[in-house]
Length: 509
Image (cartoon, rainbow, N blue to C red; front, side, top):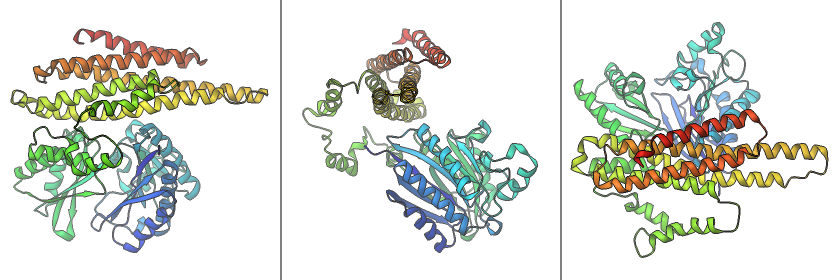
């Protein structure tokens, strides 16, 4: 199964097509890398290029893009509406399939150090890769832009890069490298050139000013079009969906006597984001993504059973049941625990989705919609953990097969076994934490969901508790083989805290 990531480097060039072609060409030269999209904007003077593929080739492609930008882009001669700190301004890595955010953090750190080694361009880390809490948010890192940071970094050690000398590159500035979930870059244009109105709307909707969670925004002057724009980054479209952002901008615009003339997606957008928006605006009843033609066709081409028909549900479950039943070490109890917790999150989505359609629960529509997005994300994380758990234990088995004929081989084998066993404990611990969170959130869902869903909600809580306790059992058995006493003590403390949370809330299950 391929491990897939996305990388969306942002370059400070949006006007010269020849230079943009050269950037694309440099990254496209790496075998196994796919260029999915390229977007450029003359007002912003910025281009966004979307890459996808396995982690190592994508990382190399991003590095080559940084090198080409160093050749072509001189920030001392650059101007545009969009804030920027570097010729290659931002390089985020995003997990797609078979890869976690943690994997992308490790990749971001590796790429950041390689940027300095190859090109002597300093690097800041942001989002999940941030090394300091105040650098999690991109806007904090980029505050002052190239011109301001170039001067401040020489006087203020607190602004020093995470990698490289405490100064910016004279023409390429610095690169901000990170790891994050899928981000939607979404711009909404207003029928006014007054950018102060766009700034007021941006302030009203962004989270840092008390607006919508997972929304970052700013006003932009589109001088060439005589329009003002609300430029938006949506960092978790499932918990704060596209339609909610659009509706709030429309409402705020009306307060200032203006209206929306259009909106645009910069780069790519997940199909689910569009499906959620269609469901909201068209008020579908009992809508399922399986009703989308392309989704059904993709399932058919992959050999998946059709949504309806005799034996459909058994056919969906049979491959996993058969894999568990095989007389092999994996998938085992850890994968089954992750699956149980994923089922709890999926059942929670059903409860919230059906409750949202009932008139009796009309007052809770927004809360239920947020809950659906949250549980969808949790289910996806836990589904990925099914394979991660099996893979971590396979790593332990592989370590035990290492040669041990010489003292050096024995030491290397022992070290590898310990590292692999730690990993085999950390994966189910993450599952247990997530399952416990779901268990607690399901208790909160009870007060806003339909009473007719009570039995489904109870089953979901029982599955979440089973997933958490099953994962903790796998943690415990791996800890017995780990010699690092401090690690074992810390993990057992976490396990006790999770068990305490489950027990404290058990009355509802």
